[in-house]
Length: 223
Image (cartoon, rainbow, N blue to C red; front, side):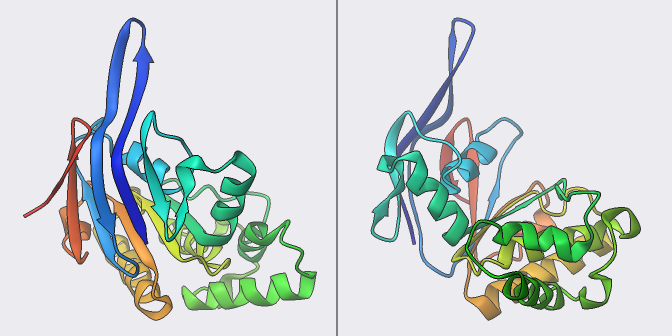
């Protein structure tokens, strides 16, 4: 699925150059569940942004299958994000004026689907995360765990190959954390997703098949 070679990302902070990622080379096979850990500021979120084609490296390349995404123009990168990659974030990022179903449907806008098809697929996605009976509820009427389930449904309604999750349980208590991880793991298995999770939580990381540690821009396999 992912092949990353000699990936480097630098930023300028005044006169200082910061290496967010430093010559990273790693492969992530299709269908693998990977947890990424490391200290704050170590490069975890930058790495996830690279995997999601949300940012470009200073050096090196990333390929998804046979496509070297670091060499593609922005228009094609947008297509890859739309078709192949789903995103889940710590803060849910739901639109407060829309109900759960409408929030999920936003992921299908611009894909040329009829309203009926968008609605059918969105209802199926909500059902897959156990929220079919909350389709008409707005975010303010849902618990934090339920809001994250809606966000997950929005991410998987496109039927992506990859699901990238940045601290998906960071705003939840331990009970809700375990429920969200059950949902993510269930979708990973049933849909044969490649699932990459950035987390500070060892309870989340231990559920992954593989753990990577990022510190000072360097990536290493965790014991």
